[in-house]
Image 1 (cartoon, rainbow, N blue to C red):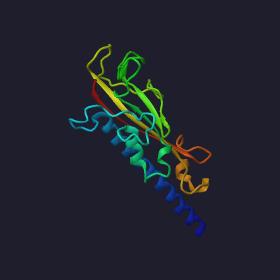
Image 2: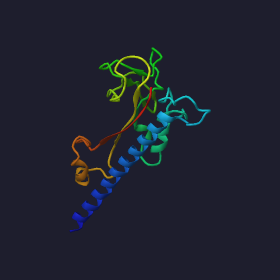
Image 3: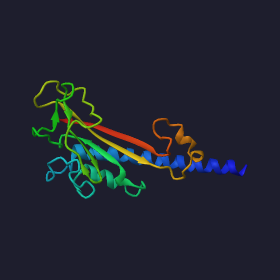
Image 4: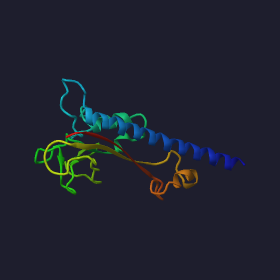
Length: 192
């Protein structure tokens, strides 16, 4: 009876950590999208925050910095998260914060950040959603959908297939090697 009880307790510990990670990623995405759209929300801070720049873990005015700070203390390796920021602050080579490159609809430009830096501005992978009320033709005006997508890979607290039975039930999240990958996303529309 004791081995069965220990197995149940260890599975509960791993499942609890699973939910801790999910809750923290969801909260970080929600906070980051608000900051990406509103910025500092003061007359002094008129510009929208950048995605992260060349050093997202130290660029205190960036969206990626906010995500990494939200995850610090809650996750074992917060800088291991990948943050995709799709907002109008990501200006492309044409000096535009949004583009019509995919499907003729207005999409915000994306930049994918890791702890070592952010990639080039583009459509991103995966390609961001478009706002259903965005202007279909080129020009100004309309709405643009801003997104923050956080991807985080972790190992359960207690390794071993026997102690991660509930995590294995979520197909596509945890692999056979024992690591789990979560992706959380938040969206908010803004005037273009």
